[in-house]
Length: 379
Image: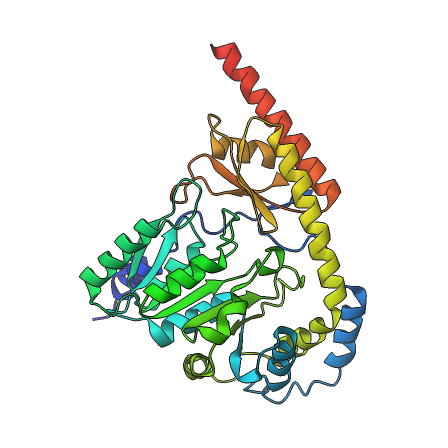
């Protein structure tokens, strides 16, 4: 018997429940004057990098598969971070690094542990790979409390056995809260968890320290990085992990053959030659972040300190989605995270150019003032 029509297809090809993305992860895309919703670099890459990439593209043998080991890129990254090439794994964005980690070390009966609120794709990719998720909660300052970590560890062990969790995620700086984990906290976590500790440092260049400092003494530590933010290469989707060579070998085993195309490998290698420009941009972003945070402090919102290229703030008693929509109506797009765990009433704004940030601050002040006037009229 053949099944035809939408109902028949739905019956025969039902997707797994885990394949449904958590509501609110994808930020709406819209044509606006000011886009500050996805934590991208506020400036394009240096023109000299674009020119060098265009020149080298002409010599890429596009009819041949790329270097399966990404040898030149891994060597360049190793030199950049003062590690060995055998400690570097490259992939299509840091999300693919996370996917490979969970394919290699997660799976049924091998849970991942994380602490909400945090990056939504840690739990989503875990579920896609058949990895159970055990989630703890961060405290009111969005930090990982030792007592909560102990409780979550105990829950993982009770549900899945004493070797649980197989993978633990710390996001530092944490997205969307902006806080950075101290090195002592990273040491404490890796000493207590039985499996891999993945420290996601997508915004690591904006923070005062990195878990990379601990790699030599912690073979179960994996540091995940991306080219999307400070290297201004979000459109190319390139990320990497730095870890013990045995972990890198496991990640390579689960990656698809030739998964990293030749263009990405060349772009990443060339980008590392523009370190001075990157560091100057990071410094400018940090300075601008301080200015925006101070301006937000003059508005009736709650602001959290940030070590990233974004700021989390709460607009309560105003309604978060309504404020977000009012900003969008003024052609300013930021991120509504008010339906993420523990973030009721919260919005997140990326740090843009000074003129973009001024436009955001002016629009937010106008929206909040209009909301206050409306509430006064009603009362």
